[in-house]
Amino acid sequence: MRTRYLFFFVFTLLFWGQPAFAQQNKIVFLILDGIPAQDLERVATPNLDQIASQGGYSRAYTGGLAGGYSESPTISAVGYNTLLTGTWAHKHQVWGNGIKAPNYQYWTIFRYLREVRPDAKVAIFSTWQDNRTKLLGDNLPQTNFLRLNQSLDGLELDTLRYPHDSQSDYIHRIDQRVAEEAADYLRNQGPDLTWVYLQYTDDMGHRHGRSSELDAAIEKADAQVGLIWQAVQERQQKGEDWQLWITTDHGRKEPDGKGHGGQSDAEREIWISTNAKDLNARFYSGQAAMVDLLPSMIRFFNLVVSERQERELDGVPLIGPLSLSDLTLKERDMDQVLTWTPGIQSEPLSVYWSPTDHFREGDQDEYFLLGEVPSGAKQYVLPRELGNKPFFKVLVVGKYNSANTWRVSGKPQQKN
Ligand SMILES: [Zn+2]
Image 1 (spheres, rainbow, N blue to C red):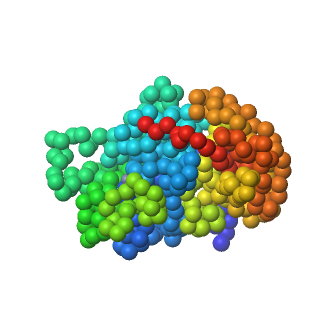
Image 2 (image 1 turned 90 degrees about the horizontal axis):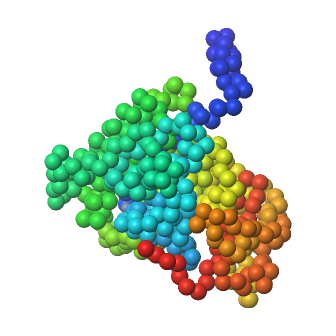
Image 3 (image 1 turned 120 degrees about the horizontal axis):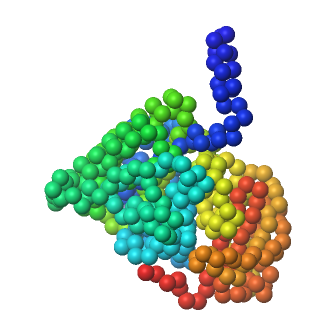
């Protein structure tokens, strides 16, 4: 017992009063491509289960507001960029796997971290090179020349070492190398932020749908997750606090579970497995969104985000307290009515309104305070002369988080 007290005392001296304590917080997020929740839940995934046993598992959604202004195709690259930026496609402007013209005004989690902590060590291990070159915007002027400390990708372009075969075995072999190198790097270098992307499950889903082939691919992906989980546990034993977020980028179309891209419930449904502590009711609601992952990471890193950027985040954190979530604008009679799900504690919320979207060009929007409302009221009716405008943004700000929603009527958004 005496020894234990001594250890506690030494530990306290080492860390007491160090403001940089959150720098011991590290994040790895993994995207396992195109695994429907019901298939994941049917197949034995001991590694994902073990991770979730320390945090949680829940179904979630992607695709934005179905039929609404933020509707986003349930397509791979669209989903990745939604996760990376915490915004839907109407903002980040990635509408397909061609990734023609991302709007880099919407920063990725990599950039949020780097701009605050230039010394942060960041890495990507991916079976698709575009994730680094186009989505993260590696070394582009538009991303302030974001450089990664380590990357492994592009093996899918190396047809000598990975000759393409009709059964996509080469993709599995690339995934394996990606996972092994990611695990080595995590173990030896302890990077602050790492993205691991594995593709094989998507190939099997497209080819075979709901099938024993897909099940086997899910088991293989779980084993690859296990390599990374093992490395993370070794780092945790050194006193670092590691958070893992594992998700998929879309579901698949019923009844065969092959295609995706549309807005059916089955295509929109994803899942999240994490070892994160302090998961909130939003996480377990089954209605957590892909855009919630970025605010969760920001909160875990304790990163400062400018007010201008905070106003554009389409998600809310899945850890810690919330002031509100599920902010929605609905027409009722002649009025535009805001509704939301309040946090656990009642508190005053401030409602703001802006008539412009200059943010997407890098400029400021001016917000006007409309009023305050207790969170428990769960609704706010906009003044009719403002609610009638064809375009505006609404921002609701609470003690713990904010949320925004837009009204977009008339001409649909430009999609490239
Ligand atoms: Zn996909």
